[in-house]
Every structure is written in C-alpha cells, then in structure tokens.
Length: 433
Image 1 (cartoon, rainbow, N blue to C red):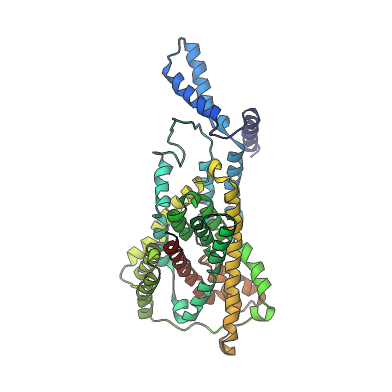
Image 2: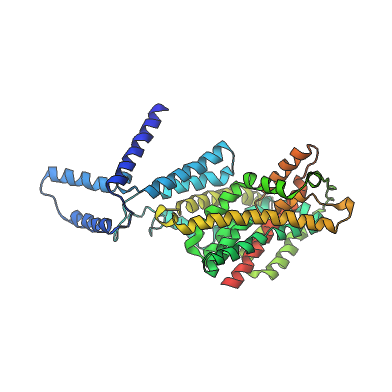
C-alpha cells in the first residue's frame, strides 16, 4: 500500500511541476505550433543513431500525459475518483457512478492535441472508439433502450390500483418548468434553458434524450448533474421531507392497495402508450419503449425477451452510457462557468420537484375523507429516480413509525414520475424544436 501511495505521490508531483513549468491550456498557440513542429520533424531523417534516440525520447515525452497535463485534468480526475469512492463506500447508485467515474478519468487522461494532429484517442476526436460509442448519446439512441429495460422491470400495480396518485408524479414536474424560467433569467437561450430544466425530473436518460436534440453542447454537464442528483437522493430529499411535514402527517397510515388483475396489467401499457403518445408525440421514443418493455413483462408470453431487456441489455447500455457520458467531461470543455450554473440550477430544480410533490399531497388531503388520507411523504417520490425515491420515503417513514411501511404506496408516484418526466420532455421538445 505504501509503495502504491508513493507512486501516486510521484505522479502528482510530476504533474504539478509540469503545470508550473508550462502553464496554459491544451489548445494554446505554442502547442499548436509545436504540433506542426512534430509533424515536420517526423519527415526529417536524423543523421545519427544518437540523434535518432534523442529525438525519439523528445517526441515520446511530448506525447506523455505528464507533458500535457493541466490543472483542469487533475481536478476532473479527482472528481472521477470521488464518484467511484461515493459509489463503493456509501453505495450511492454504484451501477451509475462507477461507470461515470471511470469515464471521467478516461476522458481526462491528458494526451497530445494540436491542430492537424488526430491520435484518435479522445471522445471528441473523429475515428476514436469513444467517439463511436458517444454517437449513441449524441443521437439519443441509449435513453430509449434504458427505458425499455425500466419498463420490463417495473410493476405498475400500485399505480393501477390508485390512479389518483399519478397526480403526485405530475406535480413533481413543477421543478422542470420553474428551472426552465430560472435558466432563462440567468441568460441561457430558450433551448438551453429547456434542456437544463429537465434535470428536475431526476431522470438521467430523459435529460440526455432532450439535451441531445436541443442543446448538444450541454449534454456533458446536464447528464452529470442529473445522474449526480439521482445518486444523492438519500441526501437531498430527507431534509425537505422533514421541513414540509408535521409529525402527525408523517405517521399517517394508508390503506393497502387493492389487488390488480393480470388483465389490468396487460391493458395498462397499451392504453398508457396510446394516451401519453397522443398527448406528447415527441416523447414517443421514450414512452413507446417504456410501455413496450412493460408489455413484454406482463404478457407472460415473452419471458425471454423481458428477461433480456431488464438484465443483459440494460446492463450493457448502462455501462456504455456511463462511460461515454463520463468521458465527455474533458476539462477544456467541462470546466466552465456554465457548467457550475447548470449544477446549481439542477440542485434547485430537484429540490423544487421534491417539494412540489409533497405540497400537492397535502393539498389532496384537504379534499380527501379521513379514512383515505395520503401520507404526504409519498409525494417526494414523484421525481422519477426509480426506485430510489420510493426507498427513501420507506426508510424515512420507518424512522417515524417502525411499523408503517410506505414503499408500495410510494412506488405509485415514483413510476408516475417516470412517465411524467418523459411527457414533460416531449412537451418542451415540441415547444422548442
């Protein structure tokens, strides 16, 4: 362990010395000129073996990460390591944060860049492997495949048994539209504001899908913000839940949901697809895949397809999506003032969405008979971080009353939030296209 720490310390010292000796970004005029020099020198034939060796060593050094490291690279690599640490140490969405963290590190390994030189290494370099994989992000290919897997693993029974709880999923989308207005006020253009606002749905695939169509240049910070806040649901939501509810409200017991027939489960994805797609046709790639995946699950005739969609396929897509989204955060493109503002707006959007769901649950209770009151905590599950928000509600409720289980009740607004965020994305897309 000591040897490993020593090696890392040496690497860090070399990088720091490199920063002080040759400060500046990757795309400086001096380095561009040096790129031309490298190309020119490659054409010159050295006269002696010694000159060949010296020139080879010089060129090798030019292409090392130590020579091309900047402060931005070190910062982003540290961010990637932080993501991996949070995933492993605190179990914060490890299936997302570990691929994203590894992608951030891979995307910020410094390499030689200059005008006229394409090593086909970085994600933004045409012809590189990462560039090909990133095509699925830029063209919105991966999000519908993720939705297919989500549909194949989701049980909509709790929502079918209590359709009124869909209103909580809709109410939680208020964060999207308020953040859209906030981004406009801060100077983003209308299309960028729409892409930033969708972070409030706490749905990474939906955020990528929308931003890939109306604000491609913001996919990196928007996707990282959305997935970060999805992972931080257990940290962000409980204080808001405690602030907006009383002790009496937190211990409300809800009647168990009624049993749902298999026929209802089969009809739900069919009817749901037709209604939501008619309301928001622009969201068809997401909604169509979500309900199709659920139909595979509930039909009982396509078990192999449903099993593949909710296991192998979604796992593969998650790996590729996480790596490429992480790698897209190259320091020279990611470390900007706009990225910091997007992270701030994303946090605000997520908190407003959580508060919106809780507040609407309290409003519904005003018009609900005493024996059918809702526990307002389940409103916090209206964001589409499935099933994490529902688990947070369950754990928070158990702390208030160890015998009051809210998980099945919270799953209804949680899955409604998935549908709601996709519909909201479609509405924004139709307005901003």
